[in-house]
Length: 344
Ligand SMILES: Cc1cc2nc3c(=O)[nH]c(=O)nc-3n(C[C@H](O)[C@H](O)[C@H](O)COP(=O)(O)OP(=O)(O)OC[C@H]3O[C@@H](n4cnc5c(N)ncnc54)[C@H](O)[C@@H]3O)c2cc1C
Image (cartoon, rainbow, N blue to C red):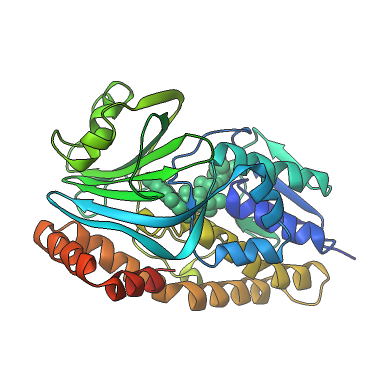
């Protein structure tokens, strides 16, 4: 006998979990409000232990074959200070979300999963229901509204595979994708609303005149079809063991995007959920115990990196502290290596 699992949300966490369960013979349905393929606001930079989770689930090769680029170096810019290109302690995998989400959706279906695309789940939490429905929406956090913007462009030549630029109201990452495409993705905060973003998005993404970002993007040819935006971001950490439902990925908690670790957390939390859900499905484990095992495993895995990432994001929004940290990082490779390791 196999109890079925229902997954709410066909993003990275939901589809990865669905694939992991189907591989173990568990019947799964994924409800996804949107359609595939689609562009998502994302730096498209997969960094951290999620790459190993993908390898263990047998997905890494297919993803690499679909069109990835390895990011081996990173550079950081803030006003007049910068950290020149440095090797990353561990290479990141860069892939368009347009390609990645579709690949996982196809894999899920090819394994016999039921994908209800274009259907929004309106039910409540309960036995056999996993929430992989993405970030919680919070219009205002500590007095600020937070948004994310992303667009692909050509004719951009970053000095490293990934550049992170700090601007007065946020940060913008440039990530080299396969071919000559560069993903440009930013997260911004404001005490008031962001008027007419559909018209003004370039102003946000290209940075203030005279900045390294502005210079870098001077000749950028934006692919407007890839532009997307997301609002109501909230990166305050949540503990899985305090939530009522069974949650993975951003539905559990969202790590500050500057770490490039959110996708990794989606893959890792999906992998951590597989075994307890298999045991529940085989009626070896009651639902509350399965949910508890997943929550404890996720909190154990993520709480340290969430603490460091939250601290780092707060620090980098204080102009003097940011300058000091960038200068320190420029002088010491050990500092950048330590921050990298602590946030993934
Ligand atoms: C500005 C920005 C930059 C980022 N950059 C990076 C980066 O460089 N590297 C990185 O690793 N991460 C990055 N991230 C984070 C990363 O995008 C997320 O962590 C990741 O997408 C989380 O995957 P998920 O499956 O949990 O959620 P999602 O990918 O958001 O998927 C959730 C899905 O659930 C669906 N859904 C929601 N409610 C329902 C419902 N009721 N019924 C049916 N479907 C529903 C939604 O349509 C959506 O498709 C960034 C995020 C932002 C905002």
